[in-house]
Image 1 (tube, rainbow, N blue to C red):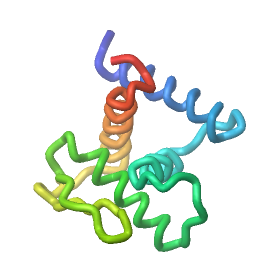
Image 2: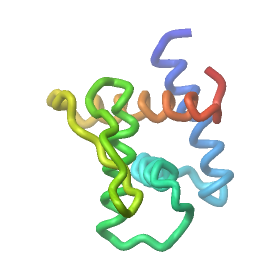
Image 3: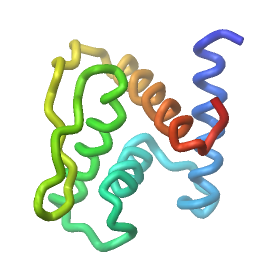
Length: 119
């Protein structure tokens, strides 16, 4: 199977799983998935977050998702338990479609690491 086909198949499987668990059967968009990953990585459960916290959760998720690609590295947890990452390498300029593919690849890798879908 071609790499792009496998990515599409794996990502569709993730969408199905997340729709059934979090979307009342409706597919979640990329931002919603990134937000959920941020909540998971923070590890405080489903609590009420302020608007600024929601942006920070998405930042945490993006850093975590791009860590295996060498762009970020976990640095420390602050006094409130929020993870912080340091930039190892700046992201190259990417077109919108390229950004989407990179994030989908990172999400698939993340869910494989979490054993949500098979390797």
